[in-house]
Image 1 (cartoon, rainbow, N blue to C red):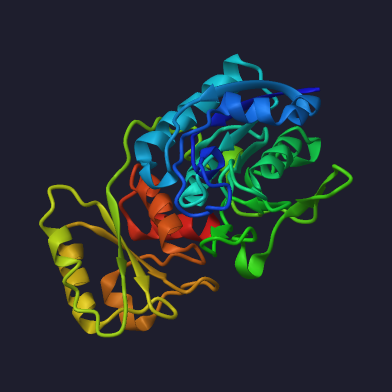
Image 2 (image 1 turned 90 degrees about the vertical axis):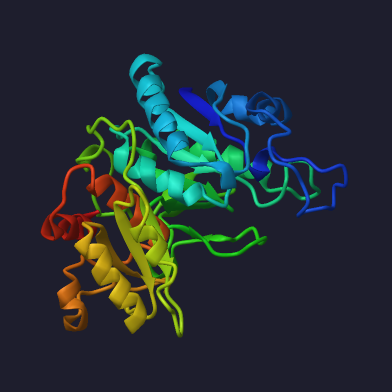
Amino acid sequence: MKKIKVIAMGGTISAHHPCRTDLRNYTSGHYTGEDLIREIPEMNEIAHLHIEQLSNVSSTLIDTEHWIMLRDKIHHDLRDGNYDGIVITHGTNTLEETAYFLHLTVETDKPIVLTGAQRPFSAISTDAHLNLLNALKVAASDTAVGKGVLVVLNDQISCARDVSKTNTYRLETFNSGELGVLGYVDPDDSVQFYRMSLRKHTTSSEFAVLPINDLPKVEIIYSYAGATGRTIRPLLDEERVDGIIVAGTGAGRCSEKEEVELIEAKKKGIQIVLGSRVMDGRVLPLERYKHLRSPTSDNLPPHKARILLMLALLKYTDNESIQTLFDTY
């Protein structure tokens, strides 16, 4: 059997409520990784397991320091622990962000799989047990090698770059829009892949070998009908705001008042990336905004464009290089 490291970080998969039918008022962090393994002994039939509790919080409390700590832990475990793969249990609210950061920054072709739950571990009909079992099956599968960081919930295998949480409570919350899932974990215990991501990640990513101790500060501005730009102005007075992602309307557009503030941001040396609040489709450069000299986010949602821009600013300041990153990652 494969040797798999399980890193527990909390979230709904670790949550408890005294009432087994309460699916919303639970508290994360009640159960540890050791508790999960003890309650799901079938996991020991899939791989040799080693469990570590890295944190035990709601994923709404996860920040960039957790990402860097987790990245360092994975590199250490794969190098010194000789593990065949990694499974990370994580809250679903920001799971996709942690997954994408690792997808861009971890130097390995071994499977790294994130999973969580939509229903607390203590609930009737919780999805925690099967999600964790399926994540372990994927991490122990030879077919998962080289696929980048993966997200496994609801029997589906998704690419960290493409997947997003799309529903507040339903089990089928994680979807990849028009791109679709990579594969499935089927009832015969087989791991079936049908496609793979062609964008750069893990061993092909230039950020995987980059020392990362801190990340630039990048904020997201959400555009809407009649947007005044008032949310941008305070960012210009901050001591250190390095970048702004614009979650624009439609094909990446913003209001005229927002545009005025973005011009001021550019004068202060703040990097702007034009994105969209729409789930699917690429954001393309428009003649209308040529004067902003700002890269566009391809089809990344704003919260993932933020991650790529933070990493980009560790190396680049010119628009052309940053645009190339959004076109290839």
